[in-house]
Length: 169
Image: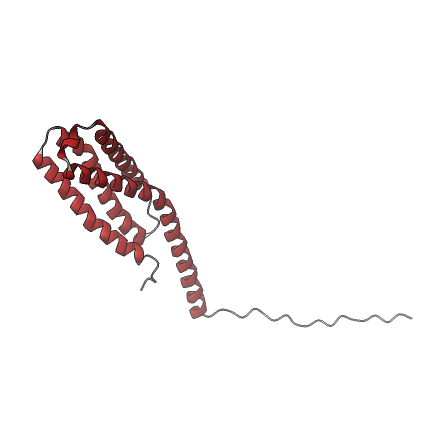
């Protein structure tokens, strides 16, 4: 005759309950991972308009240097076209920069500065042609002040960006 074997039933061990400290550590790690991902998403959104913006500023700076070296260039069609092109590039990129959405409090601080920098250069792009056409020294000084103000804010934004991924204390 057949003998039936009974399967031995072993009690299953309950998963160990996590302590409050372990849960808190896991939550902190998940929050940090989320913050770092948000930071990267912000960088990714910022890179293209910021690159265009910098290129426009560089081109405008070259045109301004040429004019300082040779003021008669303000009558030169090629110089005018290259300068207007640089100003258009600055204006378009500045508006794109302002459209970037911050992803957390730290990126918001950077974006607030980027918006201010963009506003300074929109002013430059909007007013430089008139200042040159009318040889308006006061307006040119105002434009220069806008550029100088943006430089300080850019340096501040760079410092914030360099420290973006540092742990939150």
